[in-house]
Amino acid sequence: EDQVTQSPEALRLQEGESSSLNCSYTVSGLRGLFWYRQDPGKGPEFLFTLYSAGEEKEKERLKATLTKKESFLHITAPKPEDSATYLCAVRPSNDYKLSFGAGTTVTVRA
Amino acid sequence: GAVVSQHPSWVICKSGTSVKIECRSLDFQATTMFWYRQFPKQSLMLMATSNEGSKATYEQGVEKDKFLINHASLTLSTLTVTSAHPEDSSFYICSARESTSAQETQYFGPGTRLLVL
Image (cartoon, rainbow over all chains, first blue to last red; front, top):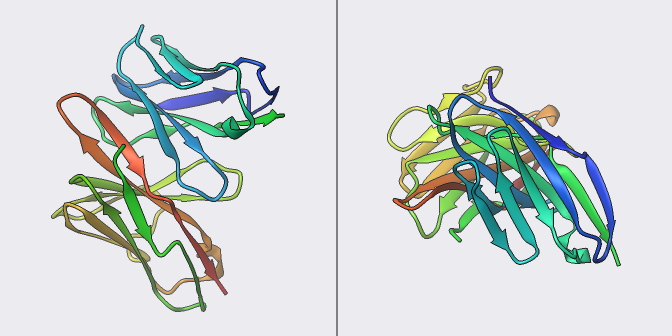
């Protein structure tokens, strides 16, 4: 069974204080690892898809990396508007369904 | 990025009535869509996979006769909550799978909040 574990559960940062979120996974043949951002009361917003170990993708202050066992989402010099819950999900090669982690709630204080 | 819409964004209904939620992919065709529900401060729980032109596939523990799914076209899937009860109150979110030669991802709708009185 595919499993996704995210840590920490919650992260409180000062504006400008860089940090990383972790997503550990086990999956039967990784087709893709996805990162989403979710604001309260809204649907998840797509951030990145990573397909193979060693791959990196960036978007503004966010950078996602992937190894064979985990993925990191680095937030560089965060701003209050980066406050959200960040969700990690994996898709196995033999199914279209995503398995989600519980998420990391990031709060950035000005 | 691709856009997925949901309608309505919120609905209040009386116990025993049925509610239909629409999910549309606005700028791409989706042969596969998914329906999730989310409880406060919890992650997404997959309810079913909606396949265009065929029957939906339900996750274990989800009543297919209660949550009717119809994927009538490549851009529209509907979820009907039949004989709704207060325990069906939740945040329902759909996603649509987009696959190109370059990449694949699932885009989510904004969600529908259902309150059953």
